Length: 103
Image 1: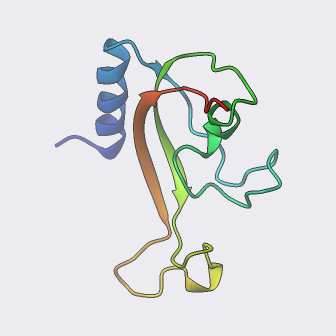
Image 2: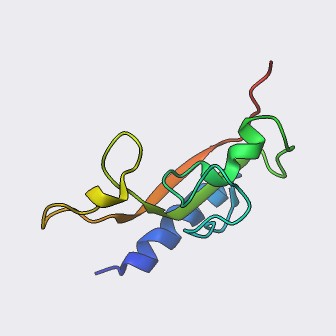
């Protein structure tokens, strides 16, 4: 049986073979963005690219990143893991093309 690490590596290697660049996961606690306290979505680390503030280094990427998923419209930390079957920590598996939003 494959380990979780082997499955993640297989996912990344598959997309790398299709021309995607493997991007390491950003930290869970974000230091350079005053609008975010923690990573709550897979695209957080690409925010500046999506908003057109930064040019992407690569056009196609694959990333498996750590995310903190909490409930509530505003990511209410008081509502984290309120049931025994939920967990606030997850990994977001993503592939995509990095494009900017044109004005």
